[in-house]
View 1 (spheres, rainbow, N blue to C red):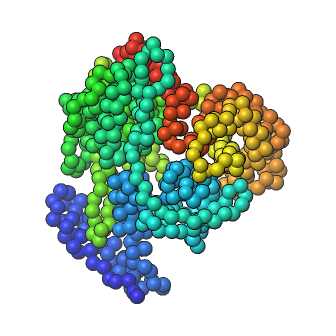
View 2 (cartoon, helix red, strand yellow):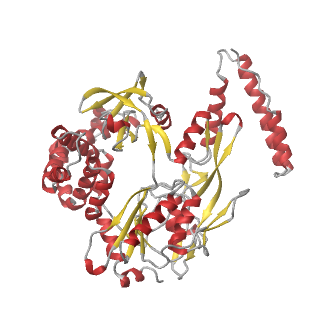
Length: 557
């Protein structure tokens, strides 16, 4: 069927009736809408092949959005329903996270015990090849999410690759309910310094503030806390009102937690907590990293500016943009960036300027000379435009570049997959978790020997593959590279140098490797309890929060 002729006069009338733009700007809207309308009609009437109208419009919308920031998105009817379910924290799915590899196929990066993938024996590290007859090569994460989700109880087959073998698993979707907090407990440490509480906040869902409050009260009921660690590492954000209420647990309803400024922003300009403080004077350390974003930065930025907490870890992501959901016709929806948020000192921590792009089309950052400074409540200097910089900086790699190199080549991840599968060959996954067997398998000395062997057998091939891919971007091959005088180290030279670097960074590498493997083999609660004793950043945070003199030194100018 031919594309229906579309008239945008109702849209044009709506724009003309708003009255919020100057006459010249309104003329630009009217002119360009008329051009777009005529172009759309001509394509529908006269293009050599029939064009699906919905596909054409979606392509145009996506191209238009691509010139803005990555958080302004259009959702089809199906995508709008998916987004709503995700925000509500309940949906029909499989209980996993995935990441894309260079060959275009998704790899399972995390499986949640008790959910559909776990029950079907789909494991972390499995490469997903097909869902039914759908080839997943080069599928976007958005498309993959749509394929995996569906009505609870519905069944599908997934073809996957594991250790070079192709397997087919039958998966029954289940109702997935997510909580914002995954764990709370007391951090092991010297009894003389008093008990220190710990809360892991994974996202800012609809009940995040209530969950944090309930867990905090539960910890307080166990005795007089000397301090609390709020862990926001890896937390990409969520609902702004939940972030504000969480800050209120520690500062009460009086201070402004965040202010929102936008050209036509119609929501509240200043946000204060709606709840009284639960722990107004409890010493507090907030852990962040480069994946802590948005609402995580509202919490950490506000507590830093109000000198209510010591922020520790690595500099946060730097997302200071506010999005609202706008309902569109036919149950479609748009997520629209409407404003920037500012912490109590007045700074906006947005790192990238999407309105100013370089010659390659990439968003720019401010020059150092353009970055403004602000003052916290106590007079400490903080800066805008670069995320939240921690008061106490922790480097989990110990300054060793080799850790990031092994991560970038997926060597640490794939080694953990190898070790995970070796463990499950010897133990029944459906039986109760045997903590003693898992800890024995994760013995540091055994793991270190295994990691060195794995890197020695795999590293050079991955290095060579990366170099060849780099040459291909220059339209060169290996023979041409050598003709131009290019040299690569021999396998022995490369591997020998890499193993030497690894031995120099043994402590940081072993900590990373052991925690990653334990996370795959243990239920989340058991893993979190174990990580409290093994994670060096948690240990350092505990040392700060349990030492009053050291804690206070971070909060004075």
